[in-house]
Amino acid sequence: MKSAERIPVERVVDNRTYWDPRVFDLEMERIFAKAWVFACHESELREPGDYITIDVARSPVIVNRDRSGRLRAFYNTCRHRASLVVKDESGHCSSFRCPYHFWVYSLEGELIGIPEESAYDDTGFRKEEFPLVAVACESVLGLVFVNLSPEHESLEDWLGKGVIDVLRTPLENGTFEVFNRKKIDVKANWKVWGENSRDGYHVPFVHPFFRRASPPGEYTLLDNGHAVQLLGMDPKGIEPALWESLQRHPLPGVGVGEGYIVTIFPDLGITLRSSVISIDSQVINGPESVTLSGRQLGLVGDSDAVREDRKLSWLTWFNNPVELEDHPIFEGQQRGVSSRGVRYSIIARGRDTTVGLRGDDNRLRHFWVQWREMMGVDANSIDPQ
Amino acid sequence: MTPAARASGYLLTVDDLPRYAKPDRRLELVDGHLFVSALETPYLERFIANADRVVRGAARGLDVRTNEPIEFDPRNLLIPDIAVLGEDHLARLIVEVRSDSTERYALGPKRMVYSRARIAEYWFLDPRASSVAVLRFTAREPDYVWPPRYFHPGDELPAGVLPALAVAQFFG
Image (cartoon, rainbow over all chains, first blue to last red; front, side, top):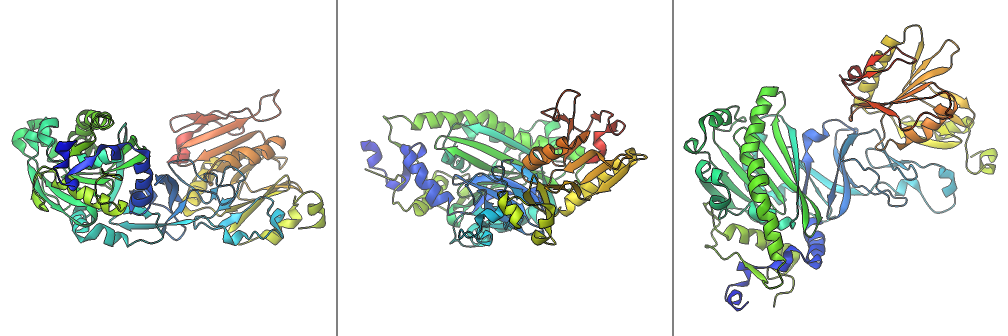
């Protein structure tokens, strides 16, 4: 403990922040209920009537496309007895009908049907005053986000020019759609993956393929806890037959071997690897449980053969490293932070630069700066001693 | 609400429906309970149009109706997406396409009315799940056999009111 005290507070993390329910409750309230949280890609809401459901800060939310084509979001909670209106993860409908007492809402959220409605005569209840409660929903470059807070900046302002300009290539250069989904259950706090995706230090040790095939690229730390790191490919470290496939079908405007990872606070990663984009977010199940939720984008009109190549690229650069190599690290770290005898972990490595190659713990500290700001605390803890 | 409806505990009859009518709503009655739905989305309209084409192609000699109300009695009026009528002008097959976020209305109250009317078959098509739930009677049961049998593209719907049909035709 004393050794940790000599390190500035912003360079250590209270391990209780990874499992303490009090911290988790505050994070839901102060971070996830205030930030723009990724919901889906627009290709998942192609038609008026398409919807998906997600949980944001423990609140169930419907995101849908209404009859005019506008994206909307609502709390997935019936105004009658607060039952979940929609249970499926995705679907298509012309109206939302609550399964309990069959109250019906339009795609615009208006309450349009109540069985035995006349029973409410002279009770003060007015149907028009009880629509589904709206949630802010905006989209940038086909990426749909929601924000539970009534007071929020625009999505564009939240992401900032630095993030959006990077994502323009290739998202602005073609029509994309989700062609693959993958979910992985992880017994770890949501910050474990968030930090890992900003941690260049572990890469040479945990990911032998990356060590020889993915030279470190330049990173830039941006406002609101977001960051960008460029990624490369080194053919000398890749088996020739695999390299032959990885070179094929680069996305529009992207050179062979080019790529990046954009980490968006609090828990979104968007990674480009030449021929495929992976959007990775988290379903937060509790303080020590998440489901990593990945979506892979290809171009509308890709042939099956092209999709196979994109999928191989995703398996090579994303799925296999995360599922086979990072996953045990996530769960091992989660078990370790629960130790009563070790209060702090260290993110002291390196200087506080905002640009560089691969990077040190400055990229993790950048994440924690935003965490402290949104949590309203001065240390990486809610009760430092 | 009519005095008769109030006396029977908020229940309505078909005569009450015009007072609730709106151009963008579909009104149905099940045992006097009013069920309001939104009109179909363009996607569902296209899906129903294709299903209608498939059913008409198979229902040679039978009368096929689309989106037409069927009044079973003064307290029960439904508007099935597709109905196949026999020579006696009574419905023998009902085809409904999932249009609500939950399937409980179609497989709950609506099923009950169709079953009570002894309509031989009830198909429930779910466009996004690419499934057809088929409900039929057995000789000894008062209701459709539950749970329904589900069919998917690659399956064939067994012959009944219509000859056997490839499920894939509905989801092409």
